[in-house]
Length: 169
Image 1 (cartoon, helix red, strand yellow):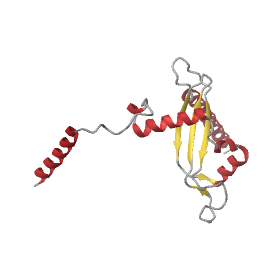
Image 2 (cartoon, helix red, strand yellow):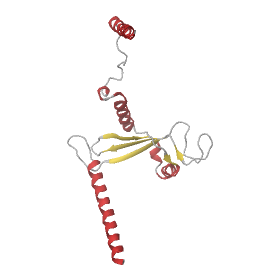
Image 3 (tube, one colour):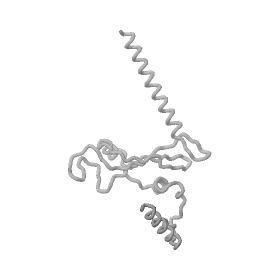
Image 4 (cartoon, one colour):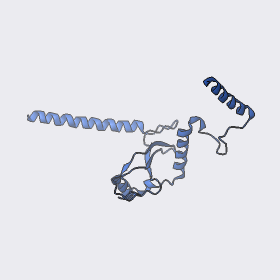
C-alpha cells in the first residue's frame, strides 16, 4: 500500500512538472514579437481595464444592491516588444470578480487608466480593423464613407426593387 502511494505521488509530481514545462515553453513561443526581422521572445503584456460609465470598484452596484462581480468591464491586453512593436492581443468583456477589481485597485491602479497615446492608437487601429475589415485599415481620416450620388445608382436601385416586386407577383 505504501509503495502504491509513493508511486502515485511521484506520477502526480511528474505530471505537474511536465505541465509547468509545457506552459513555459508555450509562453516562450507564443509570446514572441511578430515584427519582421525581430523575433524576440521577451515581449511584455500590458493589461488595461475599462469600466463602463457610472461604474466604480465598490461593494455596491450603481443600482445600490450588493454585488460580487462587475458585469460590464472591457479588458484590453496589449503585447509590447523592446523594438517598439505594439499590438492589441485580446479584447475581453467577461465579468470580473470584485476581489480581482479590488486587488487591481489597491496594487496595480495603473491598469484602470488608458492614458498612453501609443496604446490608444494601437487599440483604435485594431478595433477599426475588426469592425470594418482589413481593407479599411489604411483609410484617410478625412475620407467619407458615403458613396458618390449619381443618377445611375438611383435608377439601378429602383430598377432592382421594381424587378423584385414584379417577380414576386
